[in-house]
Image (cartoon, rainbow, N blue to C red; front, side, top):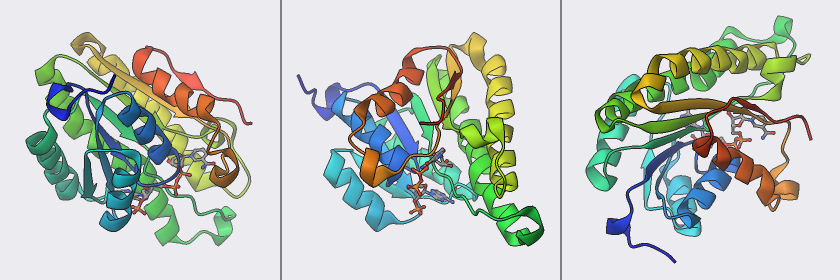
Amino acid sequence: MCLRLEEMTKVCAVFGGSKGIGKAVAKLLAQRDYKVAIISRNLDVAKATANEIGAHLALSCDVTKEQEVQSTFKDVVKRMGHVNYLVNAAGINKNALLLRTTSEDILSQLSVNLIGPIQTCKVAIKGMIQQQGGAIVNIGSIVGNKGNSGQSIYSASKEGLVGFSKSLAKEVAKKNIRVNVVAPGEIFFVKYLCSVWRVRLLFSAFCCGFYLVIKPF
Ligand SMILES: NC(=O)c1ccc[n+]([C@@H]2O[C@H](COP(=O)([O-])OP(=O)(O)OC[C@H]3O[C@@H](n4cnc5c(N)ncnc54)[C@H](OP(=O)(O)O)[C@@H]3O)[C@@H](O)[C@H]2O)c1
């Protein structure tokens, strides 16, 4: 049975929800009667995705920009209600051996993959503490855990995300807020988009208080 928008109480912000993993997660959440906000830099793509999957809101935000993150949360709260669930799926990957990696690529990967989720979590937990509960899922990578040649910076950003998430989980557990990391192996979306069980694993992190590592496929 589908609920009407006003009957829904679960509000979820999916950063990086316009494509790939974030889109798949957003689609499943929308199907399960969550009120879903799709957030990415490109508003046209976010809007098209929201229409396609039945999400309720599309917003433009660069997670590396603190002011944009803050105003985006304000917008979501104003239009959909308090954010109970946050998914951080925004991420970039610029493969190169360290000696060939530019300073710009080092900073951009750390900014989007690590500082971005830190900023969204910081804003989200304020509201979750007021609401006395919530859940956050950060998308890491198996590369953070295992390492991979040509991905030292990406790996650092993802393992940094694990340390951040574990510490934050300890900080906010007593406030009834769960923080988890899902660490997928490589996913080729055209080929694997229909592999619903993988998406269900991401969704299950909302429901279970554990740190989940998905082995490489
Ligand atoms: N695909 C894989 O094999 C794989 C494996 C392990 C882990 N992961 C991780 O899973 C996450 C999603 O990966 P994916 O393959 O689904 O990526 P994707 O298809 O490239 O989608 C990335 C999403 O992030 C958004 N984004 C990028 N930079 C952003 C920024 N600065 N601010 C806000 N949004 C931004 C993109 O939209 P805009 O460009 O419009 O902003 C898009 O919605 C990433 O963190 C990635 O590291 C992926």
